[in-house]
Length: 207
Ligand SMILES: [Mg+2]
Ligand SMILES: [Zn+2]
Image (cartoon, rainbow, N blue to C red; front, side, top):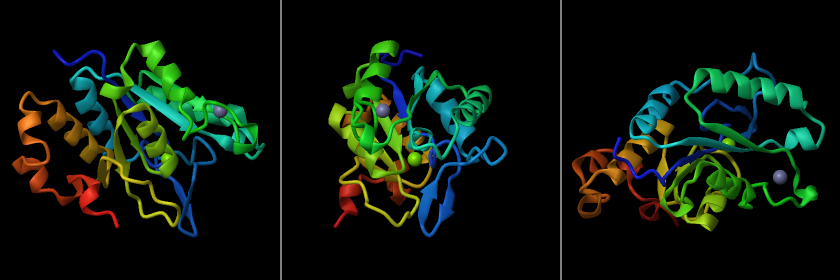
């Protein structure tokens, strides 16, 4: 351990922990426990993060519950399955739609702030991993270091995430590198990240 106990990792659910259903280039959540498929790199990625003592907190928008397209029971069954399969500390959920105008639906920050209070973490010393602009913007609003898993969706792109990666495992390796004792002198320059172009800061890619 020896890790800063005030840091944590905030994880989006769909497209980060589990595969999404793709239709016409857009992503949708699995519709049942049977359709839930944890992405292959995720157990190893979470083990790395757990190994340095970081709390793992899921923060997920599930508006299909609020709109009536999905039942609360199915979403809770999916979360029970994720909790059983993965070393998650908690799963925070916003069930609202935009029309509800709640404080918790990403990119709003209520869900992240509640999780931070409950787990005693400092969001400005924490990391957020997501696959859509709402995740990244929520993380940016509270000062997290943000990791965008770019899955090539045909939709609005996030604006200036700190890192663009292909998998949660890449994000986890980068987080470990940032937390290494010599991270300040080596940020973005170490042989590890230089050898993997997807781990470079996205500002080199954007525009
Ligand atoms: Mg997602
Ligand atoms: Zn909400």
